[in-house]
Length: 353
Image 1 (cartoon, helix red, strand yellow):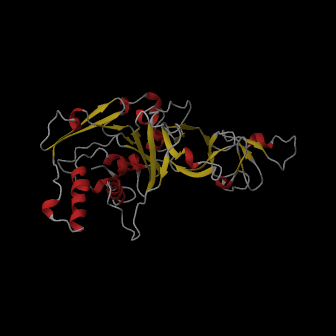
Image 2 (tube, rainbow, N blue to C red; image 1 turned 45 degrees about the vertical axis):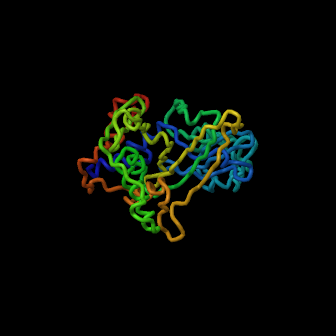
Image 3 (cartoon, rainbow, N blue to C red; image 1 turned 135 degrees about the vertical axis):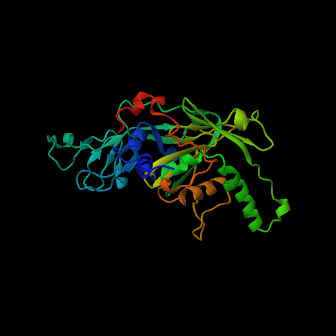
């Protein structure tokens, strides 16, 4: 159980909040490379409570700038991409990827007005077909070269889905081994039973015999032993890595905080290809937008992630952890409670309230 105050500290992600400042010291995927093209060179982005416009200009440079032109406050999502920069469609002010205004067409040719006009802007980097943004202080950290982002001979697919809840509900689920046998295995059997399958033909559900957690350099290793298995098996001996602060590895999922009550769930699928099958270009991947609910407004539950989405979102926009009644099996620690501030690089922790 967490106090209301501590729950607030762990869930608020806007500028100046403890977790918001921490999150700004990491790179976050905000789009896929194929989403920006000649037909759609801009995209509205909301990240860590900030409204921004992502674009790719004609030179191939990516920019992420304030979504409002400082002149008359028009939305820059409808801006015009140029060889270098994004031009406001209202009066033609042109901004480069640093946020600097480089043209104010209606002003005198010798005017220095444009030099005093600058909007917030953040660096963007492409890796593995995803576009990552960094909203923190300089210097920009190296974007981690996780093996699933840099495998140069694989099929790649990314599934984007906005979940109407706080990011921590999504991430702490990764540290909860017990839900697997109930939310997924048992729930699948319930779905089969509702569809008319006889009880004796439903697959057995393996129950957990032991769970464990180990803090390591990049996060936490989650371990489990099912009934009928031992600690020699991979589920315990190898474990399942959760990468600090918001990544589950294998399957690769990134829980990107849009704001306090919405999360962009990035499901990144990588499948190695046979040596004789040509590999796609490094930034070429399939982009999908799976449905959250069906035509009746009910959560889609016939696949694992759909069940997870339901479990996260139905806790409410921000889970009321002060009302939780936890038992002996609730040993899965919060990724922040388990990892002391001293465990992480000082460059990421400096100046966090």
